[in-house]
Length: 355
Image 1: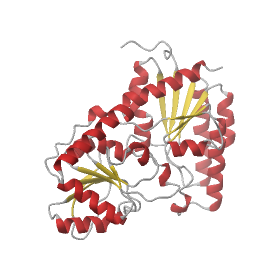
Image 2: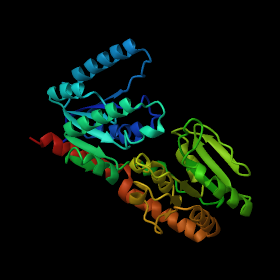
Image 3: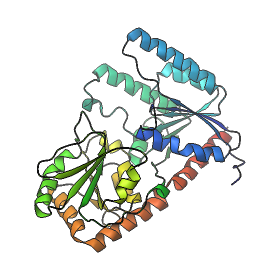
Image 4: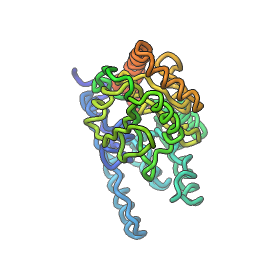
């Protein structure tokens, strides 16, 4: 396919928050689009965030060097994408003076989870909120990962486009549904624990007493133990996660309800659904946008609902396959890489031609 003439020769600098492809947000919000952008004639350079130094002097030196490097590169670029990075307002003003247009991408409540991070002081929280407000007000476009995040950004700007997280559905082979007892949870640990999953440990224990064949597959960086539950731990890898999901039967996504979690963008649900798994989730944040309750997944708000819905899907092969199929169709039609890329491309084209 020839390059899009409206996009040809555009230069983009992407300042990403992750240091590598292991950072899910960086991988799904920026890096998976670079090949498509290049096919449309756009030059893309990605600058990863540098590891932070604990030394005050060294930290300042690294910051100055990084900012100078970014400014030199931004002068030569039509657009600079800032992926969740909260630069100081003085630097943002310098960046604007280079003439580059700024897209700020956010798929989290960036400063709403301060109470969950013991390293944050009241001053740190104030400082980060100030930086976030400054970049939201300055950006030419804000890419918000969900309706909730768009509403938060509206306090500071009306230049907002909702860009959901997407998945490359071609990488996901639909589940064979051969083993109805294979539950799966993809998630990050917090200090070796799973705070979102922990509230339903008793549910899984009760279900295991009724269905001893149940296996809970955990795809993450650290194993867990739940008394009486057969847990199969899989060390996460980008290459293996889609293949692992194809061998599972039900995807679960419990979530706490607070300002931080409401800003999450439902990546694990998209992965489950792309693999043809019926999903059960907490009705929080983007989960309620992705899943249509009773059609391509289910909402569970109480312990009893979690128990009855998992038990229902385990016990009904026809329903499990039907819901999984409808979920995959929804992701293909609404959240696939190609669909969301077109939204991004239209926004970039519009921004370039804006006067």
